[in-house]
Image (cartoon, rainbow, N blue to C red):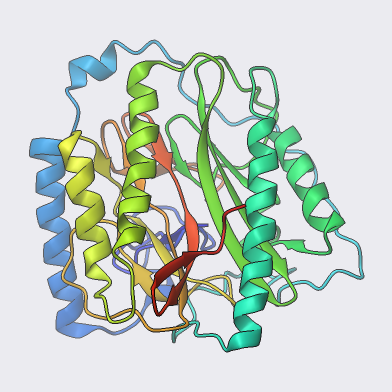
Length: 348
């Protein structure tokens, strides 16, 4: 699940409480970084200019799309979790824990726990993908995901995180991330990102993928394909000692070739015993410092768009959509840094 960038007043990974834009800074993100923060802000400004001059798709092309804009549907009551299942500390608190300081680095036992939670998350996501078809409600996907997770003795990490009401995120078409499952039925030609995180034996496994629903047009297929390529190209450069800023450069370089925008407001993050921790993983070009460590786990989760990369947050304080209604796609894996590079923990 993505976090919002510490430079953005209202967003933190894909998951941090009330995230209406243009309000006072999130207290969870108020890490004092001095000149480093100013340098990152300059990087963001330059990237915004690139978005305006290069990545942003021709508005005439976007205006030809006859797809209906997303509208909120009816959200069903929160699903129950059996008492015997161990729950994360943040459950039943509407306050988001934020990003914990310090990296997630694991010993042998911790690595095995991370592999188990990652494998389960991957299996759940794979099952959820098989449900994608015209006519199914995103609420039905949530129920299926919820049941599979608790049947395996795990807790659905999004449920109750900062008040999030569901067990999975379902982000359709122009929804960048954090879509709340509801009564809306998927339609032929939709694309949908399903973001699954499980909490198993005290460790979180976090993954997502974008699926095609029915007959999807070639432009949407290309967006989904390139987004997946961006993720795997970024994974391929990961290894002990590699600078984290190479992730953003790799992703943006590939997205630029196809004139797709890279969302800056939401980021990857450390993950393990806590849902979100350091490091913050920026998916766009940046000059952030920091290097990957042996035994460290974190997510990479690029979000690409056909048009504007700027999010608008719905009144539910979660759902983030592109301001121009253009399509957005996302893929995510949880990674473990090993001596040989990066092991993808969230694949079947």
